[in-house]
Image (cartoon, rainbow, N blue to C red; front, top):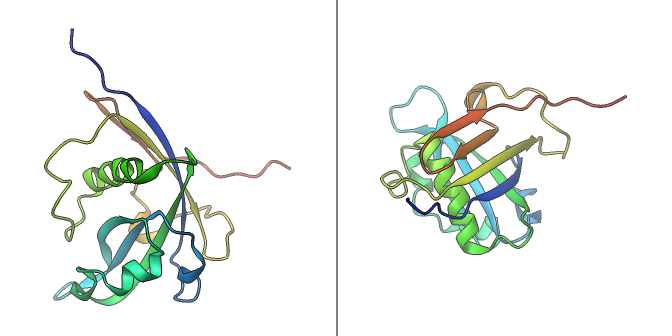
Length: 164
């Protein structure tokens, strides 16, 4: 019988699109999504998904792909809230899951090999910290829940509501 890999659950709080002043307020160690238009594109698309152990604004200042996004550049920052001590390996695991599902054009690596068995749950927030009730446009079809058990993919969306 084939031995199953250790399964991991990761919860990410996404904020965005973040302004240039807000991007400096995020703690080191996060994921990010870059959106915008590359040369000859008519509409904005999800272009790149990455991680950094540094401050996000420092990473963006020296990013090797950012010059290929010629207009409408936006950044979404994802802070892992569970597990709290995820570390670089866990960030890479979450990044691999997101890249595999989204297949961003500027990501070359992590599209070839299947990720490790993982659940990634994304909660979405506006730049001011309020919850996003609707995700229109680029993230409309981006799943809130992505699950890979080593044999099957599962995905779905969460409904946001308040208890009165």
